[in-house]
Length: 318
Image 1: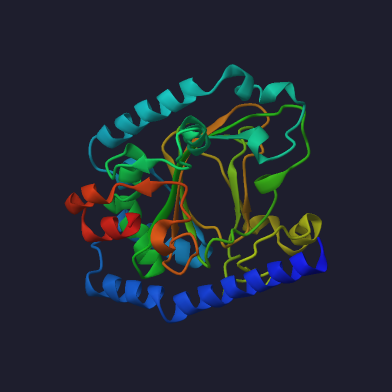
Image 2 (image 1 turned 45 degrees about the vertical axis):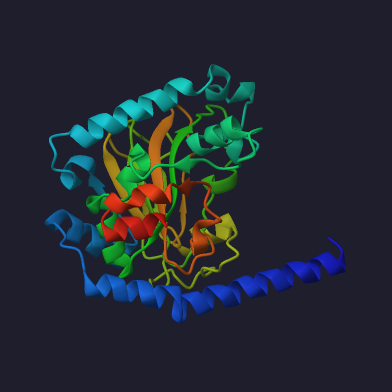
């Protein structure tokens, strides 16, 4: 990189940091917090337990049936949607294109969002326009998920990703690449992600892993602290600083739901024996560059159909 390009990159990064701080402390987040405080959600006992776990450890693990008391109707509908996604994954993709090991994230992680983007190529649109009642957006804005996340953040949050993933197993690989390594997500300080397992995930299926107490203010929050740039710390140094007892391997059955603050250290997708099939939703504060105006999301929402949504859900998809 030339000095001129390097200077431009540094200037852009500095502007991004200043903009983030302004929105977090003075602009979007304050307004969002006031809206939350004026009409806080009524949480169930299970939701309150999740919020308490998130505040103490940065991660909470529960089950779909514990959050959704509808006799399995929501789960059945989403399972059918997930089955259609899995059926659409080409055989060669599931086999890692014959590679012995992944060379990057796209080798081991097949994402529905990428499929949609490929389908849109050539028609002048980069990202899909989704209806608020699209199943995965609907899931992301349901009270069991959105109200829990908002209660943890103490504000109304934005949904910037609602995706489905198929993790490809590589039986012969012992080398971690991309997000299979320990890292902090850069989207927001206290960005929350919710994962729902639609397959049984054992140690061979690349379970989500997390360091409890690694968010800002926690016992390990000072180690390679969160920044808006992100990045991967020296892996051996990190594991040398953190005891095994603080590391969670989130194995689980179908229907396992993981709420996690991914500004803390985490990794996943290191599958060796079986695929990991899940949905993932990302929630950020209005301060995040991904949230402002919605232009940085990998989807847009049909605003004309938002009148039927409750206010926190409409806000999340604006």
